[in-house]
Length: 579
Image (cartoon, rainbow, N blue to C red; front, top):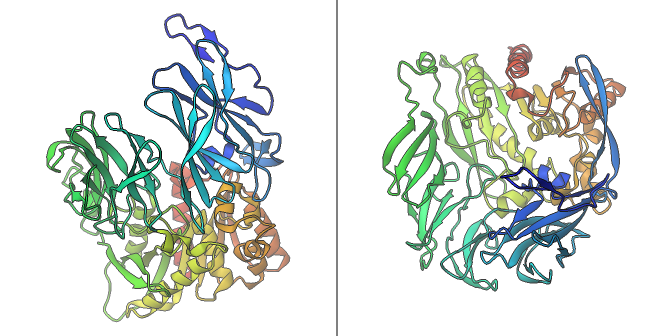
């Protein structure tokens, strides 16, 4: 529908949407895994709308239960589990004046519609298509009138192609910016409008990347012929704002703008005369400031100084400073860690350890920020554990995010193997410390971290206790786009799926397990945990369990459920890791 803003009159632009057929919306996997939350795109001159027509008929229907305190509800959902058919997607272009719609000549039968953008002239579309196996990404140029399309450029990988939001057309020059991992690290490139490479804008053994999976491309100042971006050039544990000329001849030497050590997230202001800087470090809680393009502060929006008025000030006397370092993986790649030592350590005494892990793709636990970021409660809980006499250790194993293809693709074909081997390197490091009790080591994690905890307890005998929150236990139950990226399909990689799951090793459960799950989790379904419960019961394996009625996947961030969870975990480790 279109709405005339002055009259509020609604006009139907499409009429064939019915039942499983919808227009102008993103399908499930696009929203859940691909970072695409829309299914329509206005042309710059507002004369055309590109839109998706999706049909969920091929997708299997599953029953999903959400159990709340007052009862249970059953939902029927079209869910594309690994190896099963995806939603049927078509891309169309509608002319707003005539109402005529044409098909864009790009076939998505065994592929994903990744991104759609308009060329500045409003006459052509830029369409990104990712193959079902995710090893190929094509950028098409499509005519908005005829729908005819041709390939501008193609990216390939023996493992998988990461999607991005770094396509940016230049307005004053004939070309576009694009990011690629063709060298093994994510960098920016300038292409002409026919897709030919003009030059690399950045290069080196580092990544152009933002905060998490966000785009590292901050903005372009065409008047000054400059591109601004955030990157890990200074350290994989930090993010800084950089600038480079669009005609650079030294892509490996951009100019760094932010100077304070730590984690910066920058937003370029209109006109390019200043930027919004969100910054924190292990010593500085999150701040917000307006800064000139030389990095100097123009105005503090949120200073957040740790003075007498700060809510955390009363805890600063006992605050434990984090230590950062690295150890070598088996292939020589550095594995970074963050470490908290117990409060009031006594010489000669050995202390229990809690390893806090995530370990999965697209995530970085070890970063030089304030306790894990502005929205993270986990960093504060690590501090609580240390205050209660635990050594707290966090290590980013191979397979976790933003370290380049060699580091991230180590998990291809099998999950839960190299990740655990890297965590065991961390355990070896810990056991060599005189203040660590090697017989009292625990592990905890949520989501992929919960899965990691289960793999640690079922494939090793190192850990005395573990807390597995909302874990995946059978990857065949998870969705197509995420799971097939790493494991291919169950038919093509049956052995990999079996080895990556938890069920086949459940009989080897070692140590005390606390299994936690929200009973209304619509991401990692409660079914994952109920299947494991039944398996462990059949095997006669003792374990503890805590379920949260109505709890979703993010329940640890909810005030009541989150506090209950963290207090429970503290009690669990105090009991199970006592001398």
